[in-house]
Length: 315
Image (cartoon, rainbow, N blue to C red; front, side, top):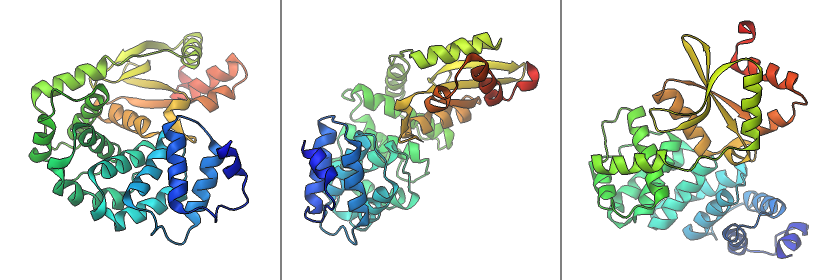
């Protein structure tokens, strides 16, 4: 009811920025989806002349709230990112980690932002906890911006927490290690930690969806040669690996709503597609749920798949 009231107001000028940040944070924390409220707050904050009244914690909370609620507002993220760069020296450890994680989660990987925070992170390296270190490592992996931050000192900080990383952090660190392979940095986690992270990553639960089953069914009906739910060398699982010709294999990823944030690929989707292409040397073709849902029958679906896979002439 409060959200409906705020979203229905003609103007939010009577609210201060801190109150709006706290409101967005409260809704995201409670897991309550309210697109109209987030749009209203985003439009208002993005339109303000200055965010001077927002402290680093409130800037971080705002970004975290939008990422957690799976809402993306480009003007808002540009606004809070600019303010964060200006005030970066005043960010605490949790604020840094949450802010960068949020930006990476929604796919807002502004180079100026991520570069500006490198010296801040380096200066506080021994103050971050295990989850914060993993969130930061994952965020830079998504952003794909090679930085001097990730050196032996960072690896040592990670290694100190080897036995206490939660599952999600171990999954993030596996993807970070893959990123180090991508950029050929030569930086590696201790072997024991690498193995723990990889094992956690590949043992993540894999659940089929109705959408995935439908796409796989049409691949089969189209007479295409493919394997389902293939575990790749990188540790990623792909929905289907289609063999077009002897020399060409294509990974088909059935990307449902969770793979996107407001129709933009989420950070996790960006990272997976990029790493499969670069490390497993397999072309990735995405089947977004809204494109598939717009196809009315099997003929249209099979034509769509042939076109996506670039194999109309083969069949």
